Image (cartoon, rainbow, N blue to C red; front, side, top):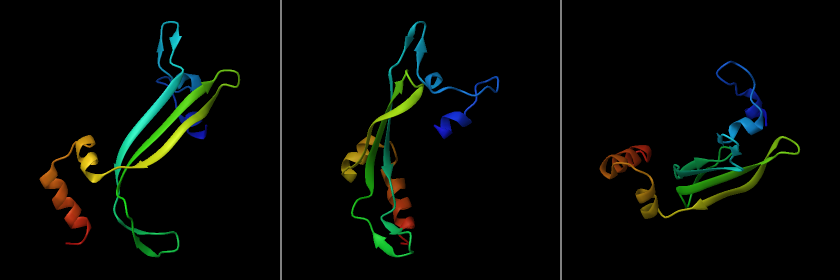
Length: 110
């Protein structure tokens, strides 16, 4: 809700949560859903500075919201972080395979 409250329309007015949903004449979409396919570095450090190697480096993150009209608030109705196979990620994420391999090698220090 804090993020919504910091948004402004083209006239500088604060938005209400309902303003984020698609509106067409008398219709307002009841839900918002976002999907992001992610690639992360396998070499990580935890909050204590301990180095580790992640077993998975590609994920699909999904989040969905519903508008609670009675309270005028966003309601989280779905959230997931699903590991994906690298071969599937290559199909989902549009990138140049030769260039990405070169970038991955550079991030690994090779």
